[in-house]
Picture (tube, rainbow, N blue to C red):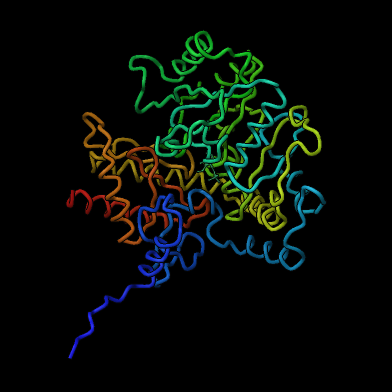
Amino acid sequence: MTIAPVVPMLSKSEDYVKRDGENLSPSYTRSYPFVMDRGLGSEVWDVDGRRYVDFTTGIAVTNTGHCHPAVVEAIKKQADKFLHMSGTDFYYPSQIELAERLNALAPIDGPTRVFFTNSGAETIEAAMKLARYHTGRPRYLAFYGAFHGRTFGALSLTASKTVQRRGFAPLVPGVSHAIYPNPFRNPWPGLEPGQAALDYIEERLFKMAVPPDEVAAIIVEPIQGEGGYIVPPSNFLPGLREICDRHGILLVLDEIQSGMGRTGKLFACEHWGVQPDILCLAKGIASGMPLGAIVARSEIMSWPPGSHASTFGGNPISCAASLATLDLLLEGGLIQMAAESGEYAMKRLWEMAARYPQIGDVRGKGVMIGVELVKNRENNEPDAALRNLVIERAFHLGLLLIGCGPNGLRIVPALNIPRAQLDEGLDLLDRALAEALEEI
Ligand SMILES: Cc1ncc(COP(=O)(O)O)c(C=O)c1O
């Protein structure tokens, strides 16, 4: 008699992860096997019924929490009427109403116009094309550590990890990178990093390598996201605005991650009172529906019919979700909640830092918070292995976290995360760190 070999039973999650591995592109960057079944607010459940606190919001997207009833209701209402009618060729109310609202809310004086896209990268592409079209200039300036997306134009600006660029050259020509000022890891010891970063652009780049009158746009994240949640010194963005004005360069602010209330203001640039010429939005703009937008000064958005368009960009369901999202942010008080939760979380994280010398820095604004893990605070040597282990331990304990930069944790919960769940998540992070340190 032959005995059948024992085939281990896979959990539902394991089964999906196996099938994913066999069928999807290996280019995705999963750090742990969370297979989502459903979500509500700041709680999510996997296909095996396990519950997690979500500190990721699907990478800063579900800013109003998962499936906010008002957003779901707006989507259902629009879905009952029509799903699509290409805003490129036809008109529909939700797209026009959303454009009106974004124009009214954009931190730009004077008239503005909106172009809708489906994603962050597409938004950046639109900004790059518009800047070139309007100025007639061929060059762009971006920053090391920046993440602006992975399509060819956006990737030419992105300079966060070489794996994102390796094998894809040549990229769009004419892009140069400057140094983003990081107060925690100052690249110019002894100098004030904000001014040093500005001087580097004027004195080095513009005098030696990049004629400023050939630069169409400086593209910058007001708070660097993927690069490590770096909040620049307060003189940096105003200084960039001055450089742009001096040389007729457009200032393009990538608020794809930092916008839509995440930092405790509707747009992060409002913390520094700096106005962009082109504002880039996506991610949280529609609480999880695919949508992006550039908002630009009207005199800049002067391209003729046919010069840029998109079949799906600004589709009616995403626009309806976005209008509901804006109502929640502005009338529902979610921006204020983000500011308060952020302050509270940062305080708790600094209390943790007093117990763990492996927490090198805690920084951010609102609920866009980065925590750098280091070998110890004496030398602040980055500890990527510890960061990765903490993320894995947190997952096993019931907390979803993701990384940023080489050794950072990003804490990006929903703007309206209830205090009890914020506390629960921070307690789990505390335990995950303790367990990781025992294990390492
Ligand atoms: C600041 C910033 N810009 C652009 C992008 C690209 O967005 P998407 O992934 O929707 O193309 C991202 C995505 O993480 C981002 O954080």
